[in-house]
Image 1 (cartoon, rainbow, N blue to C red):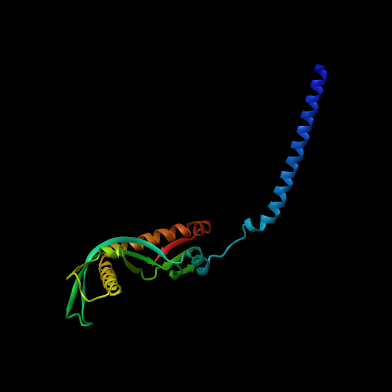
Image 2: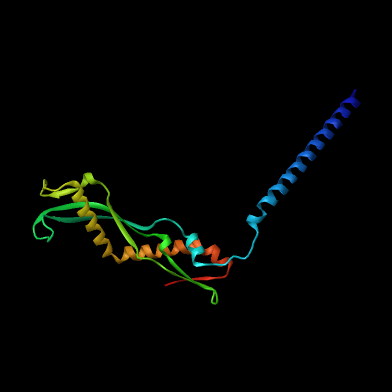
Length: 196
């Protein structure tokens, strides 16, 4: 009786080994099949760096790189000449500075292996953080909410333009992001990035 148990165990062991062997062969065949399909994707053919290639690498629709909250007081006027003051408006706005990434201009010099990048003008956008917290003086001027918000947003943008820190911070952040996005492409081809 003990011999039968051993023989049954050996038979089962042999059955498991044949099953494992067949499974292993199937996995190897699968890897070979997948490898032949994906080989063209991973083939390291030489690539030429062009300005359009670099623009595609950094193609993010719009990038906001600096943001600050600004509390200010704007003045709304009754007339376009800004002579008749209607009211003062205390507001809190969020101002964002950024660029459209596809507007970055790249110049590639293959001889010196450099890429010169030129940033577009940094754009500022402002929006009122909370319309319900606008404070008016006098409290009930004859002006609609849409016009109040437009006056506050314009004031916030003007204040932001006067802030060299915001624009400088935005520019440095943009350069860091572009450097990070282009690093793998440029380093693999031994190119250097220069900012203009």
